[in-house]
Image 1 (cartoon, helix red, strand yellow):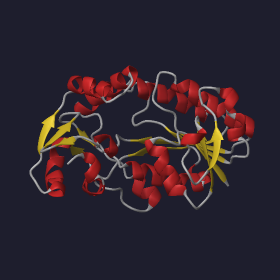
Image 2: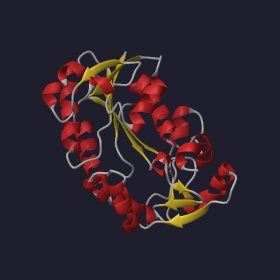
Image 3: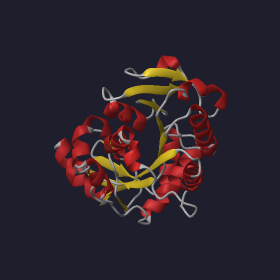
Length: 278
């Protein structure tokens, strides 16, 4: 079995590679060969340019499809489906977004809904993963003795990216068992950022105070951090939805498929203490 990993240099796909390493034949799709991760065959191409994709998809059994957020994401996803069909790929595992639908409160969620529909109608074997907000999005949020949190007060069933990857690896190794499934993935607990300070205080050995940030407060910070304007605006849309309670739920899906509980925020905070802040 050969699995093609797209988005290979991104946060999630890097972890998918880690989870699959040594168990299957791996190929990564990258735009720049010099930046390709190690441990896999390298194919150079760009999902936004379909003429570059034939060799990358040729001889592949299963594709992990992760398309970066953006106004042209449906174009990239559609190009991947076309290349997969032409190459005889049997199954495509697509990373969508939590709450993807025509009535989603974000443009990203509505675009993902369109790509999910296209995949289901493609004739390919398919599985869709819709993960909740990533715990890794909190990296860098602790500054000195203060935890700066956006969204401000909403509870969220956040998930560790490592768990998304481990779940994806289970599906990718035996995709036929997951044919036609749309999985909504959350962490094991729905928690307010304010309630994370006890854990953070324990991790750092000093009191950590919580400073909520409104979506409007967060927007210029996102731009300063290097996000594109469209990405920052859509992130603001997500923050507004989460602040209003849109993400306040958990699902049993991760444990049901992997056979183990998902990582808690406390586990995440200990493992990433040096990157959360400090």
